[in-house]
Length: 531
Image 1: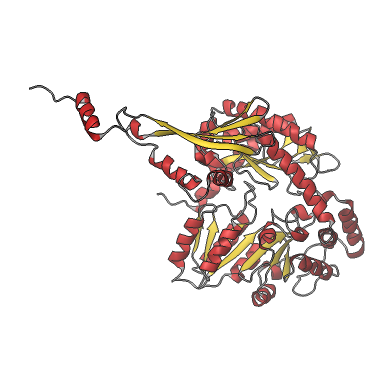
Image 2 (image 1 turned 90 degrees about the vertical axis):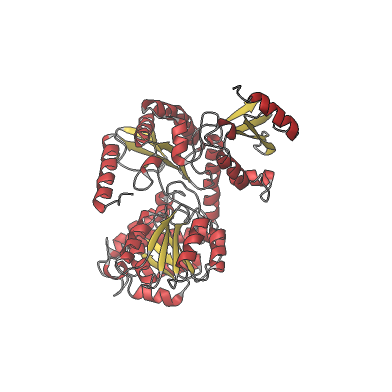
């Protein structure tokens, strides 16, 4: 395999971004005299905004705006001095509130990118090793590259592959002191989650394993006091875990936050964590807005906001389930990804949505592999239910047109994402009482649902059927290949009432006959040639 050089990488990124820009879907500018969160004006078209990462809408909260304005009047637009010398007057109060949210020591950084650059080279020692999830955020991957200069092993594994992670741990265990696995809590592109419970089990099995989570996309809309998805699962943070949250995005202000239960390591990072020492501190306006947002997080209001968002997420999921749109990862996060496979299809699809009055994000290289281009859609409290319904109607209408316009097919998209999509992966209404869900591969069926219905500890679970599909597919002789047919029937509430699967293939009519009969018939099929 040819080695990918840095210049080749940059050239590829430049080409992809340039093509998307020329297609009119990147490097855009919002227009108009103001923003309200629900709509955004692009290219003269007022569009419904389905691309924000301010999931709870706090960036438009008047309380945060007033606090920022007041801070500027009192303290100026910035406090131009390194925080290692002195912090401006608003910092101490904010730090106290953020510590109350996490119930652990915290450090506030300018943003998450600089935060990772400050923390990772300090936390990871020369005798350690780092394993990165393939889809962990670029800011984490970039910070980890600094470790290679010190000779620290840094490697990637397939996304959420616990088998591959454990294999890598076994190979490193006798060679290094600590092994750091770095992942997102909620992944920024597909909106899926890190398998927290499985990772904790690995930590218990392998004491060398430490975890580093970037949970900026899980912050605020999830967890006690809006502490995020990772904290929602763990409740308490063990010393072997470092966690990044954000004061930007859903929090509605600026900055990022490191949560570090290990007080000795906390002191080292605070005393010399690169950008913490040499970068400017947050502006008074940002700290004031964050402090006001922290008050909301520490009140019961945060749970009302979380419920309002979840209502919208559930509604979007319900509407998507009635379409054939290739949702790459179904979950209850506010991030959704519709796969297009080919970049050209992604450009075409996003442009059509923009022209229709819906702003959505393009997911492309290097955020995802080139062949995994798609459209990222985010749901926020700014979106009304009628906006979401209109969005789904437009997505369904324009997706097929984008495929046709770029000579792409649903089958090719399925192969690109390894999810076995094809035109027969459908959901049809059968009368008015039940729905029939049909697929031709177990990969198209939700794992938890199937294992719950058919059992998780028998040959009919998803793993067992994956084995069968692998054995009876792509064989040279057609009689050695099977076709698989999966059915799940649900009632009006979308609750399963029946699940089963069938196989079909070429069988000889004597396959189950006694051996003597089969031999006689086989002889008739292949008579000995006469001499």
